Length: 384
Image 1 (cartoon, rainbow, N blue to C red):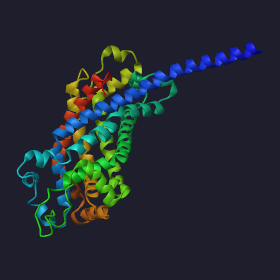
Image 2 (image 1 turned 45 degrees about the vertical axis):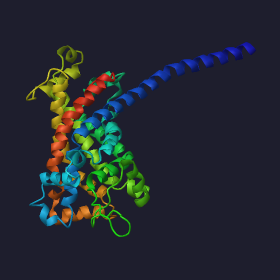
Image 3 (image 1 turned 135 degrees about the vertical axis):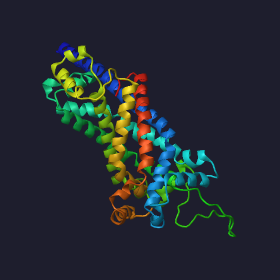
Image 4 (image 1 turned 180 degrees about the vertical axis):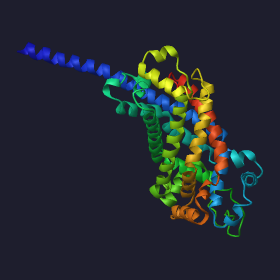
């Protein structure tokens, strides 16, 4: 009897250890992979956003000034991007670096490493998950390398819909979680430098009428906004508009980039012959393409990145303007103000700042995605 109990106990321990040993490595590997995907995307985005931060500053200020009642009659004819750039430099005592690059730069890095890294880095994982859930069990592969085979069982419209959904998912989640960073970034970029004068009460800094004080630092901006406006009402102000904008941006941007890569890339004939469905899909997708790439590399990444950047900015510009208005203002009726802009100036008033945004979004994607792709390879991951 004791022998039966002993061997039964030993068997259970052996089975548990075996199960644990087979489960732990895969869990660790998956966690490590997600970390690498997030890190490579975050670093690539932070680097590219740094280069184009001046255009983001100009876009934000153009959107805000175009919605101002005080300047509405002047904006349509006189205010332009070059004038805003000159004004920003003058506010910084003639310094181009402080006037155009420095505003919100630390918050831009934080945003790139958190929100943007999340939405781009985790996109392939979410996309593959959606593909697996929409693919019949008999057609599913056993690992991530079988993604193309699984995708081949879906129509082209279904493939593109899955890509849009995956991008929208990571964008929405990332935006909701990291909304405070976006709040601080826009506030730092939109607030002009203070006019500092001494008065008889002891040299207090005077702020021009109707303008909020420039936050002394990025880190202090978080605590000041939370203290003055509340944690939820302040740091998560405009979260609904922000999530809507992020869903449109991430879905259109990443979905278009992913689809363009597969549309413009000619598959190797030997690989195509390995799977009938895959060969059929490749032939269908590439025979109508105006120009093709024979390998997945930087040239393909640059082309697809430019296409996706233009598409994404065109789709998201109206919501992007609403997001800026909601986040930059401390007025509880900031969304109502945005509605007034549409009612009084028409829908296309929401496209104010489009050219600075397009000048930023197209090039930033051309720089961003190739960097992310190469960082993925350095981290031991496959291309996007």
